[in-house]
Image 1 (tube, one colour):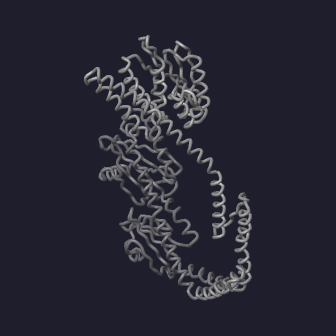
Image 2: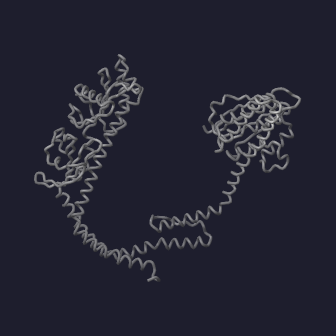
Image 3: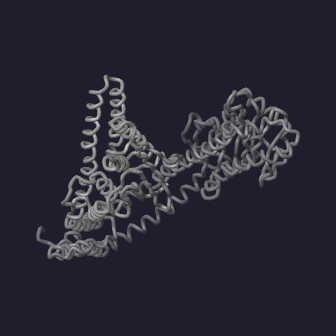
Amino acid sequence: MSNMSMEKKLIIVFVFLIILPIMLTGYISYQNYSKSIKKNTTLYAAQLTNNITNRLDDYIGDMEQISQIPLYLTSFQQLLEDKMEGLTVKQVEMENYIRIMNNIKRGTNSIYIFDNNNNTYYMIVSGGVRTDLAERADEWKRLARAAGGKSIFLSTQQVANWQTGKFAFTVIRDIRDFFTQEPIGTIAVDANISVIQNLVRDLETTGNGKVLMIDQNNQVIYDTEQKRMTERISDDPLVKLAVGTSGDFIKEINGVKYLCIYSESLKTGWKTIIRIPLDQMMKEAMQTQNITLLITCLIVTFALFISILLSFALTKPMKRLMRLMKKAEHGDLDVSFNVQTKDEAGRLGLHFNSMLERIKELIGQVYVIEGRKKEAELSALQNQINPHFLYNTLETIRMTAEINDDEETAEMIAALGKLFRHHTKSTNGVVTLGQEFEHLGTYIQIVNYRYHNKFALVLDDMKLLQYYPVIPLIFQPIVENTVVHGQTEASDETIEIQISYEISGHILIFHIRDNGSGISKDRLDKLHERLRCGMNSDKEEPTSGIGLLNVDERLKLHYGPAYGLQLASEQGKGTVVMLTLPYNL
């Protein structure tokens, strides 16, 4: 047995585990099918009843939500309270609001709005308009006012001269001022009885079933023949037998036995009773039994033939997968299993394809490692700025503390605290431009303590870019370069550092200008070369221009090679640094 091929094993399994059970199943099905059909039909009808109840509850819930809309529209409430004499204008605007509410839920025939000045607003739709509004309005207002702002649901009523039918059910609600909660009007949402007809149409047409729907007072909300609409039928046998929230029973009516299933809505208290003729059910059951016997015989006759075909069909994808594995074993990793099914063979093929993709990913892991190296380099470059700057800051505080007693030192320490807070805020690698400029102002404040207000920072109006996200510490190293290299000992003139910006398409360009001593042509050429080649390729003057190079390298690593710094300077006439960022607002 263990040396047999998979096809032969499957054939034996099919013979003993499929053909014999099919014969036994056919016999048992024939004996018990009638009971099964009745039970399944009862369950189906119960589910159908619950579905009708739930869908009707959802529809009524939507009507209640529509009635809530005026409670939150202050513009609507102001219009409703407006006592303008030209009601035509007000009528048009109210109709616009009603049109919007009508479009929210299809099937709602009409929405009526009543203000406290006895005015009625509605929009004529395909369902027509009630002609008994005057008689209904006072009752609706009274019921809505008594409910204290809650919705009131009115079951089926007879409607006078409605174009699309004679019956409807309604949701009414008091409209209260959003701020004062004082009553300012009433809303009524009408739905034609055709809404219920649409819900039960399939049952009535395909299952030859009858539907009876009653409220808590045993008043008929809907019946299939529509002969007892709005009547009280407390003495009806079906109503007396429908006890509790759900259940089923068999009842004979006019010589015909019906299977009756009922369900009560927890939302409205309405009870839906469905009755289906038993002979209709059993007729279909007998037909199904005969078909089942015939199918069982056919299956037994052809089971062996089918089992042979299935055995070959099941083993075919396994053989194809084995051939692909041999190719992969010899180094051909571009093979792929064509998955056509979701069975075990298909899942095995998916795992085989995933394994090959994983192998390819491992082969290309060198590129991933290089990318991670760049990320680590970005973090290292960003951290190079802080020690040098903090050292200068602490040295300034020390020198000031020797000259002054404590007030100025305290101010500098407070400024230093701001810088520390800026660093802690940017732990996720991103700050806003507003935070970055605040940090820059604090830095200039500290520098001016050391150089006796020699530097002035001038910013353009940055409100548009206040919350634009950038990587931290991209302006301070540039300004620090001006502080360190842009002044001469012989001059006491104030060095002005001006920052402006321009937006060109998706490019944001900052211009950082100063009127300092400028950069000599030789040194400027070296800086351009170092910016072009990158920081790691530099072998001369490893600390010269470290801040500018650091910022340029971080910008390129974070945003891409199209962004970074450009320098322009002339000895004795100052320096301009152009900082380019992507603009995606």
